[in-house]
Image (cartoon, rainbow, N blue to C red; front, side, top):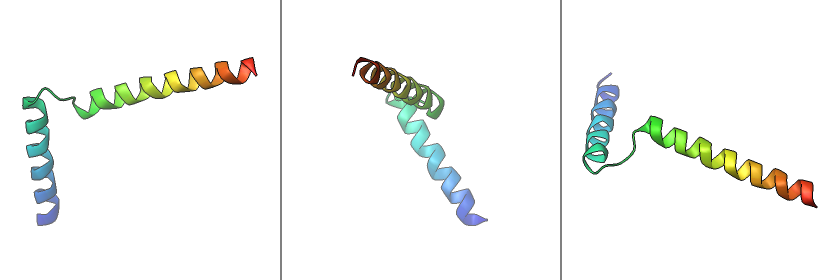
Length: 51
């Protein structure tokens, strides 16, 4: 129980630091990763279609 609290506390601290530095929230990072993967997939499909 205490370990969970400590982990959550550390996560919240890191999250606060990231936001202060203008970083992305996990949701924003997830959206960015998803867009990047989609773009890579589309490029691979184009390459496969051309070969």
